[in-house]
Length: 209
Image (cartoon, rainbow, N blue to C red; front, side):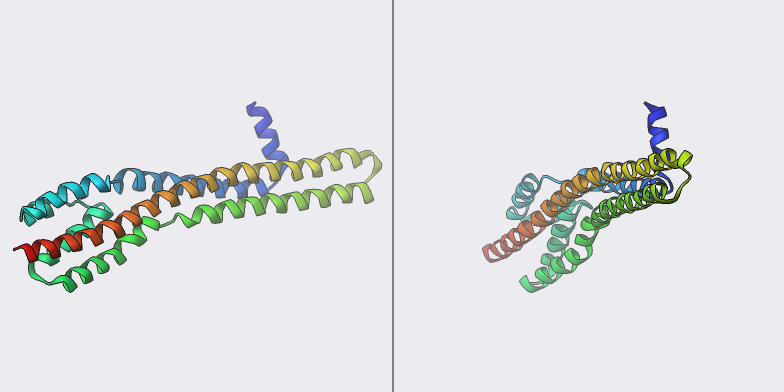
């Protein structure tokens, strides 16, 4: 099996190295974003907000602030709680918006590279296909009769191997892009939802006092 893979890689020509470089970059992005979005930034928004609401409603703002960590949702809500201690509703809104502008790009960072890598891998495979077919046609048209079969086979092998390899790289990258983009969108949606709920909760708590 490994001999077949090595032979296919060799027959594919220099385009295989370019596609491999794209693959390495894609793996690095997938690994880093998966760790960040599924572990560092992953928070059960409903559970976290339920605990936060109990503390805010009981007037324990310091305890509520201590509950907030460095993940996007707790970080933004924590800033809102800080602003509520010494400001009005507008101050809370401004603080939350400012922190969201700083945090949300960190959630979406580098995910779009996966779409680009998938497109580059596909296009490099297509370019290898075209070059391989050109070599095959040149072999049929002008090569020595004794070498035609070998040159024709080499050109077709390059065309098929680069196409296949480009797709092998592109398909997982597109699948990872869709998954990670959905996860990032979920985090951002929770930030939008619970930041509004927190502001309403803080306003209601202030009016209650």
